[in-house]
Length: 135
Image (cartoon, rainbow, N blue to C red; front, top):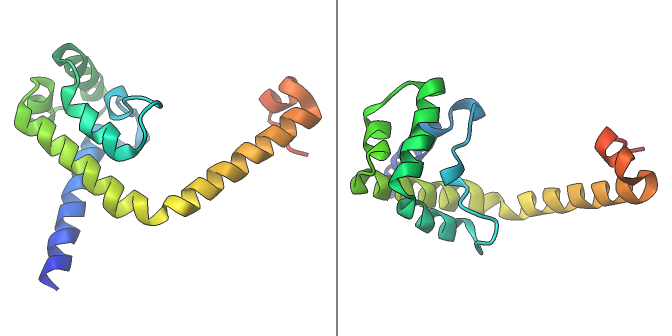
C-alpha cells in the first residue's frame, strides 16, 4: 500500500509540474517535443535537459505570458540543473505511469485516424481532405 501511495504522489507531482508548463493546453512549450526522429518518449525526456539556455529562457518567457511565474519555472528559465533533472523525471514518470498503460489504444486510434484521412484523400483529393470531408 505504501508503494502505491508513493507512486500516486510521484505521478501527482509529475502532472503538477507538467501542468505548470502546459496549463489547459494553452501552449505546449516546444522544448517538450524535441523531435519526431526520436525512437520513443523516454528518449525525448532524456534530451530535454540539454535544451540550450537561450531556448529555455525563450520558452519560459512565453509561458509567463499565459501562466504567470512560479519558482520552479524561474529555476528552469535560468537553466538550473536540478530543475532540468526534475523536468526529465516528471516526463519519464508521466510517460511510464499515464501514457504507457494506454499506448495500444493511442496507437490504434492514430492508425484509424490515418486510415480515415488517407481514404478521404483518395476519394475526395487534397481539397476534400483540407475541407474536412469524411463521407
